[in-house]
Length: 535
Image (tube, rainbow, N blue to C red; front, side):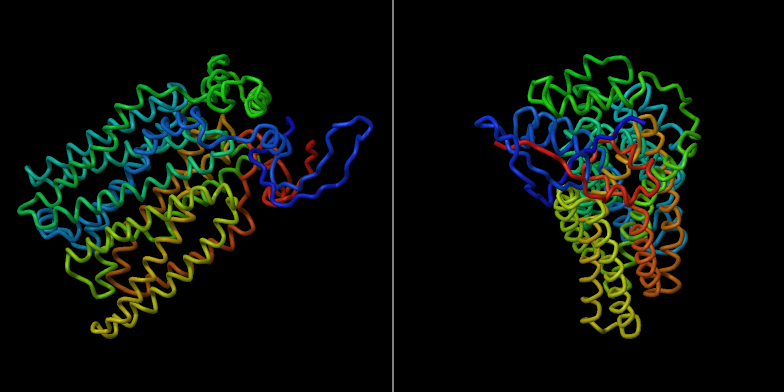
């Protein structure tokens, strides 16, 4: 295997070893840095420090707008479904309530569609390109929103569910293509921030849906849930229009025989127009060493994810962050009405108002967490997050248990809600951004689309558990549901401590050597000595 070249090497600890080579005046001193990550990454970072606000870097951020809009789609859906279930008109038309089996299967159709879409992800984004995948997923979601919105006129639950199925099917394809695209066009130094930001748009979608639902809550008839449905078209519709103007991913270009276009992209956007820029040379050498010119695997053949120990380890790391994200919160955003009911709040307008504030806080937290995944590292962000979420669920269980015993205990109700907000903040500052960057970067190029697809399978399967188990558990065992969530978060913490790999400080291709090592987790956190020259 080719020598690995780590991505972004954090220079946390520096030792100046000695001044040498003084034979000539002006000769540079040698300085040794202890870095966690790649030696070549650290050298590139010293030779050409990236400029976050350069003109070309701003264009990269602009390219991310369409993928960011796609990132909002699932968050929008979970938030409006939580709002629909507290609306009287929706409950009467489709026979649902805030908890129970009917709420479960109406919301679960979205996750079922996501599972059905899994085999088609590679077909849509590998050979035709990342851009086409974004377009196809977005246009399918637009059609789904139209079908769902017009179901109010027919009163047909089957039509509503068909619309939800297409929404879920399209969202999975669009999200997989968008996440992959952002990771592959991002400058290596800002990969965590941009990929985490794309994933964080999930909460922006939730905030948008919560605000629209609150604004329409007092409208007559079915307007209080059909208007939020029609606004679900906005983000995927805008992404459809924008994607035509986007360049293709340089990694996709390189592997499809368009080497010069790939170099041109990296030179312009990663090297400030200089093809000899260290960041450009770093990535190009990796492309030549590790990316195959043609991908020969069948789009439906997923065996390559399991053929070696290192590939299974990669898949396990990706599945962990995805499944943790789904199971650690129990899918509670879909059943926000049931949660607030357990805390003694039943007025629909107050529920929707609290939902807006919770989504606003979550959006802010997720965008704070995106740069933290680069500055702190993936593991340093993940582990405290899991611990904090477990403690928050435990505190929620205590508060809501007092409310269940005495519905007039206002102090306990407020405490339970406060810890829900704290939980949401912790979840969004850590889990939300990591779901975007970590799940994609652990895969080698030839496995990336299928790896993301398989990770989506895990996420949606876990989501199905939430959709059917959480509303029934809230109905049958009440606050004890939160005790289960608390225990599960500490189980996740233990597994992640011993198994999760640190990907900060490595390029996407350099991670190959990390996963080939006997203990990838240990190898990824090991400090390395890097020699640089200083005047």
